[in-house]
Image 1 (cartoon, rainbow, N blue to C red):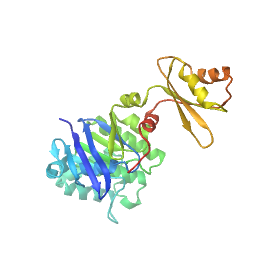
Image 2 (cartoon, rainbow, N blue to C red; image 1 turned 45 degrees about the vertical axis):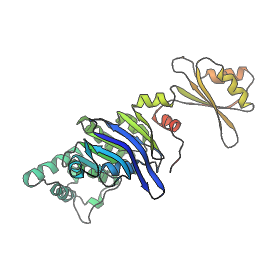
Image 3 (cartoon, rainbow, N blue to C red; image 1 turned 180 degrees about the vertical axis):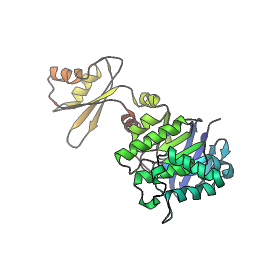
Image 4 (spheres, rainbow, N blue to C red; image 1 turned 60 degrees about the vertical axis):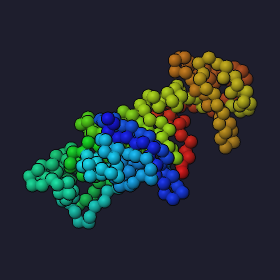
Amino acid sequence: MPMIETVNLTRKYGDLTALDNLNLTIEEGTCFGFIGPNGAGKTTTIKILATLLKPTWGEARVDGHVVGYQNHLIRPIIGYVPDFLGAYDDMLVSEYLEFFAACYGIHGEKRMRVVGEVLELTDLVSKRKSDVNGLSRGMQQRLSVARVLLHDPKVLLMDEPSSGLDPRARIEMRELLKELRRMGKTILISSHILFELAELCTAVGVVEQGKLIFSGGISEMMDRAGSGSMVHVVVDERPQEAAALLKQVRGILKVTLEREEKVVRIDVTIDPKSGMPISDIPSRLIAQGFRVARFSHEPMNLETAFMRLTKGIVS
């Protein structure tokens, strides 16, 4: 049984469709990266799974429990990390965690032990007596993760946990998430920092205009987007003829023309199995009398795959 599953999940705000028949399956123990343009429906999906929103229609399940009908069974097994930390004024880190531990029904000596354990796991022991609102953005995000770990949830729902963090804080957050993955947590994480998701996640989902356009492994996403390296070429004149010439070359999978501000760019995808050096592209054009004005190489990674799969359109 999947740990997270949505079936035709739809959420409307008046005439705006934020989620459009989203069908998503995440197995237990998976670290799942949820990516898409701003306004694509990522936060709405996470809030529904966190039992904070009701779907307009369709169904969402967490560990087999149906959102909206069995919320009392879902909330004890999830931890929701929003992209901001809400805290009362004049509250210390230890007081903040003890307050939420009490909300989870953790009392007495067990509460003190659990608070100490999550402080150690998130490397916040030295900040135990610090004011929450005086912490850096990175420290506050780690505290937010510490809060949701108090009751040892099976599922972590994380909405842009690295948003606004400096490079050092992002690295520390990434290492913390790796540790949680090793602990066997099922993690759903949305982020715009795609290279970090490529390092963290075992599977990804791409959502655009509220629709799931891809779900699967990262290598599978690369294949869907079109395997191989992409080369960008601009010639001084006759770009259509240059593109027609390249289409006939063995080892080239695809040739497309893209209009930029003042020029037409030729995008060439090379079959990785062909062994063709990328330098062959400009060499062939020059040999046929074309003047190459610009040439660049773009290796396939999660970012380029994402750009190829999406159109940058939001609802």
